Amino acid sequence: MLSTGLPQGAVPKLERPGPLRDRVYEALLELITTRALQPGQHLVESELAGHLGVSRQPVREALQRLNTEGWVDLRPAQGAFVHEPTDEEADQLLTVRTLLEAEAARLAAADAGSAGIAALEMLCAEGEKAVDADDVDAAVALNARFHAKIMELAGNAVLAELAGQVDRRVRWYYTPVARQRGHQSWIEHRALIAAIADRDQRRATELMREHTEHTRTSYHARQRS
Image (cartoon, rainbow, N blue to C red; front, side, top):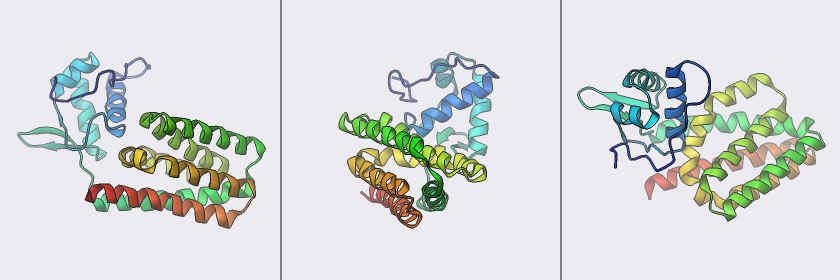
């Protein structure tokens, strides 16, 4: 067992075109956001390089970039570690998420057509199946797609760009509470779809605020348990 402790099959293949350092960065970021690499976990360059089938140089460059972006902590004489988010960091991020997504829900309710509603219904059905199967990774991915679809239906490019900047960090915080939120999260999604389909902007806004607040509360409850 390597000290990085990666689950078998967790390492993504570096098949996409582009500079190697960027592909290594994307692979490591995906491992962090899905929590295949846990907060506080020691990241050993040589072992990560072996996992990814690359030299240590692109791994070192990727870790430096991840450090700059707040995903990794570089400690003198100790090495690299996955960052452990503080309660304040989580609160700030999830508060911003609530503001962005509540506005997206309002705009989607004002303008979403039947095709958009059908797409949300399909994603919700898939998410419910993932929960039934206890497939946390699929549930997290479908949750992200559901919220991204609402953002798309909002039709505001600036809002979507801002949401995209926090999306991966939201996934990072949501993953450990996905099983706890379980079916309740998708019940709330169903209510959101109904409000959007009814073009009830006020209700859609309120439901999204409540929905994102439940995630924040669940995250902090997990931290205290």
